[in-house]
Image (cartoon, protein in one colour):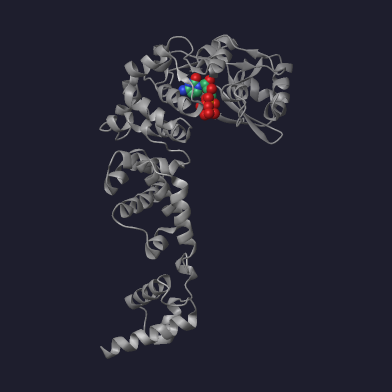
Length: 403
Ligand SMILES: Nc1ccn([C@@H]2O[C@H](COP(=O)(O)OP(=O)(O)OP(=O)(O)O)[C@@H](O)[C@H]2O)c(=O)n1
């Protein structure tokens, strides 16, 4: 058993000693069977939240109405959730009422996919009533029972299906896939924040370009922010190979594939509720992609873009043009590395220097002189030393006086 499980066994032992059942469940068990790294270990139990709180001295009520209590054990937080069935899903998002139950199998039955409906006890024995292990072996994403029911219970599960497809490169089983198409409209009711969380995981997956194609083919795209006009582009996204792109670069690539301008991209990211900082970063990358469609890089543009944005812009351009990333970026980095300065702070000149040298009050001239010197240094016309810059600026100003 993996370290993460071994560390948590005393938690199971404690619950069992108090007379209840407790198992590892969900993503950790799935990832363990897949031989992947395990992030968080989740526990399901027959004990109610109140019973859990009497067993453990340190607990936090994070989602007690859904039956989840965080147990702090040896400084590690564990989400422990009481076995439950959701009575009825009135709004396709949240159960109208959570019913705590004492049966593990009933709990597993209400989970989304068979690979996510496997429990493991403290001895490492699997409880797998819906063939989750087989699905993992066969590399199939299949809902537990009727897909219509599972997706109607929580429409976000449709996004989850495609994000697991992206992360795991499993097939989506036929009836599960068909339900994605027939029930896509239910996604409309889901909060953007929840869609975003799944979509970002999708964008980070190995099989992401194929996953985008599925988003297009199934009709899910119609219910994702500002995507309704881009079915064609989504369906042909599998023609592009986006290996090595970061999440931000993937968002940039998407807006390039959709051919939306800078203002359109800003509104697109806003509709997805992307954080402002991230949006700014992507917009900067897009700005340099646009620049590059009409210009070659020169010292000044390389400097202005900065290492990160210029590399990202080139990476995306390479994907769009199906060109060899390494050859292009190697040359570019060579050029970038020859820049005499990489940022303004490296320029051996400050606004205070300028005021001291020329005895003038602050004003727009300072910015102009700084830029003038910066440009000359970048072009290799001027050495980046405070003394050389002073002499050079004095001379420039004298010449200006003459004219
Ligand atoms: N809409 C959902 C969300 C979650 N689950 C169940 O709750 C478990 C935990 O969900 P979550 O932590 O959101 O996802 P993981 O499957 O753990 O995947 P990951 O850790 O990769 O996000 C899932 O495995 C699944 O059994 C579900 O049935 N329906």
